Image (cartoon, rainbow, N blue to C red; front, side, top):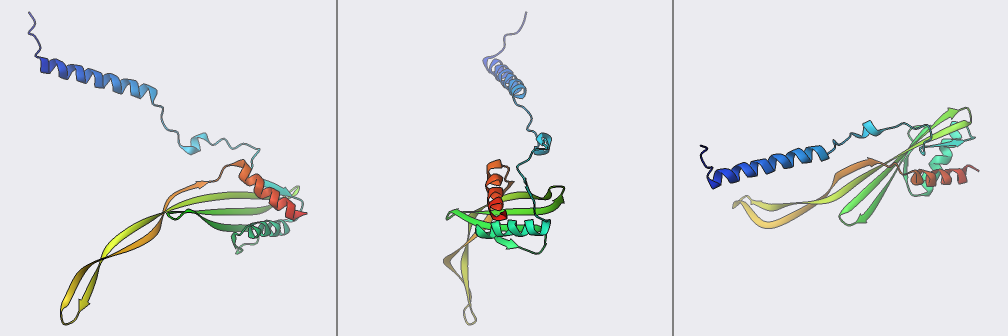
Length: 178
């Protein structure tokens, strides 16, 4: 004859069974998160390139003028590689930096301009501290004056992959290329 389970023991077994069943079901329905490189397809058609009939140096000059015309700060340290930066302040506590890199290379059609844009997001973070005063005759005294130091902290960075963004950029370059 089996001994009867006390109510507490029965409740523990039922709870354990429910938890085990829940974990089993959740592991079946949860798919593993894929890493970005696992989904990279490397298509031959890409929004990141534009063909110009000009020579590489001249094509890069036109591309540089396109960025300058839109308020980008341009680093012209390299002749066939241009880096432009522009800062945005959507709110008082957020900032965004957009960095566009253009590289001009020779091709059978003249020049191909490759573009890559990187968006970096920043948020304002406050750091408070108390002020201290030191007087030689009295010694060091800490006063309850608070000092807030606001600093921008990088919270994210992402390559811009939206084809329409690059299409607008290349349309501007094309209009200046004429």
